Image (cartoon, rainbow, N blue to C red; front, side, top):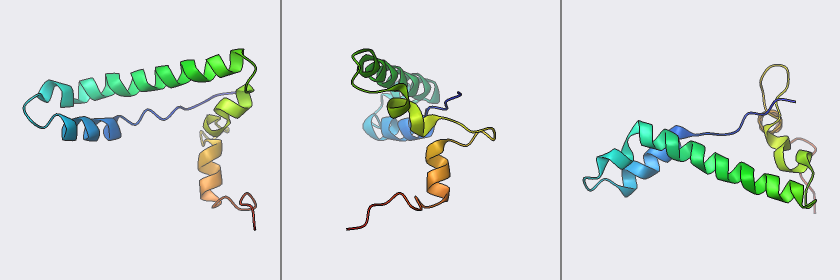
Length: 91
């Protein structure tokens, strides 16, 4: 099973640019944003693996939204495309 994790470098770069607009431009660079985005994912994966190792979740519970089909579309993207049809609970 293949997974595609959301390393959104553009979003991280935008936040860093806002936070460091007062002259600390090296922290708002694309290169730094890339490193920060991947570090965030690394930390998140380690947290998910800790949950998995303790038996608190299954691998499917932790990573299912990021599983890809044969076309490279994630489960989450497929649900969004179908507007979560049949998934929402009615009260």
